Image (tube, rainbow, N blue to C red; front, side):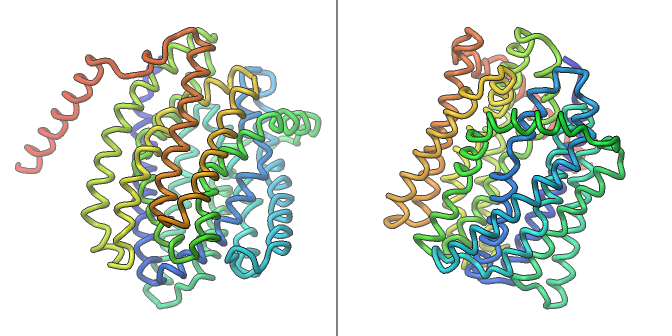
Length: 434
């Protein structure tokens, strides 16, 4: 496998920087807005995110599945932005229609606030499709610059408005929507997407192929976010404000794992199926080790800083992070399995696990939220994530002919990684002392 350490280091730097700015931004928002205000802004953005995630028609999965056909790579790239803008506009319109229909139910935010958030959906969809093309082209540096620039602009805007006392729920939502345009502009300016005339026939084929996977994509999104909507409806915006902060902080444990999965994505699609199996096993073993270390570090760090940084009103988020992190670890470590199953071209392998996990998540949330509130929602999510990964591992084992235990890190791999970490820590300690 190609040496991807430079890409990994670059993307780790980008993701660490963006997450650091994201944490800073969340502190600013938490200090400027009470939990109720944070919950209101998050729900407005959640509607826009739902439009992005439910309305993308799984075009990214279709792009990934079609990428091995080399003759289609260039037109897939040139179609990415125009197709994203068109699909995004339709998705935003549908989302706003749904909000109008259900306004007054489930503590939904003001329609005008949701409209401001949805203005960023077409831009976000274009950036989403273009980012996938860049990762498939092994141009992670372009995707990295887009992510980094967006985070810098968003963070600076929030800091500026926070320092001047102008940071309101409206302002946070507006900054979020505008940041999608920054990402798309960087991807386009850096040459990350082709500017040829779109291939309308291929665009139609891509959408139709994506629709085969879309039930699974929609279920996967709802698996990750249905708890927020159910918590808002059953417990109110204050619980949502605390819970979504915990979700944001728990996602920090995915940093290294997600980056490694991204930079190795093309390696899973370059060779024959047998080679893809071998590469996928190696990636999953490493992501397991990386994920465990990240999870322990995240829980320890959040427990120490949650009250000093965010205030006593958000103190209970530390418990929620500890309950969410195991599920997040499983989900992120198994991401390469999802990519491998997508390569097989069978929508059943991708759709069915997500649907089952969604049913488990929604059912558990409805039962436990009235009793335990956000704590119950965190427990339900972790159980559902584990269910999804169990199905993915089972399908991978069937397709590859390997036992599921082959995905577990060996004692030699664990010892090697542990030794490397100790050496790095010793070097840092001695370097700091000098």
